[in-house]
Image (cartoon, rainbow, N blue to C red):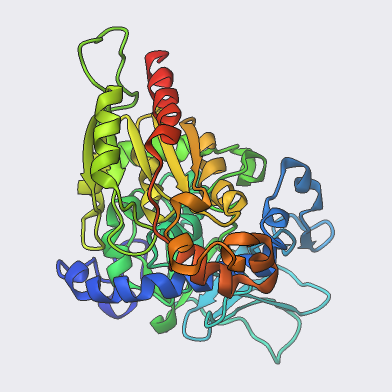
Length: 461
């Protein structure tokens, strides 16, 4: 018999090895663009060109929750299956719940009897359409059936469990947060660390990279579900994580009426990494100081080609500017501390803007949106989440004259002349041209009012 706490090595995810960053550095760069293509393919299937995936508070009533419970038997356990919504399937199982990792099963054993044996299958990954993720079978036993006896417990836990899957799109920095860390925060925060994580498709390097965050959400070593041959017994098991919106939280969807927000998530990160700044610079109290602007410089597609000119323009406007090129191998804590020291984060649409989560509340994010009618996607991926973090969001949209695509393709090419036709042709072309072949050269005169808006906002703090 085992108990809560550290598990045998074969069933436990190793803490992140020191060499994870070097080991995956080259893989991260090569995989980045492939992840972009896959991301937008998934989004396109769900969004019908951007809009339909955004769940509003009005959608709460439409979420399908099917509760199964024996009439009049309050201690007999129940299954709550949630299958509606734009992204995810989840299942909450209460009572005498037993997991078999290698078999990918979660079994509810009734205290008395159910009238029938029932079974459901869901993927414990955040996107139900993602391929390559093994399903988990949830079974409600009929205790009167001798043909399906309950598996005997070999490890008994006194805390609940969450079953989740890694892989999929995780490994891309933005998806690490959107598809894993934000939903895991929502699902687990109510337990105060007293919850066991059962992880399918486990990625030890990923758990190592985000160890500080994961350790605050669960006090126990994560179990490698696929290799776990124990029969673990829990009072409650949640299978799957639920995504409310891309990289965002809808308070009305939070479990147990917690009404969590992205402000709660960013505050949690500041506590986790002991970040010193909760608010940006106060220019009223310290008018002699300059607000700090971090300019994200991409080393590949969607990079700014006139960085020195942008730096000078920002300095002339009154900012202290630093160029940042966060690579795959940078430790998250180091990056978090660096970003937290700035008042403005600026960059072209891409994963680097995910670092807005480390900014002090009330800081500014400037998203440079590539040419090609990309504003709806930019708003979905970053604009809405940044506003929900209570940061000031500014958007600067690139014109055809500011895009390197104009020189590459000419003014009569459909990519330049008719972006809507490119969107109608499908995400492959959108990703190929507007995300994969485009760099930008900002028009300094046109961009100057955006810098002034950022400065005005900070003056009012």
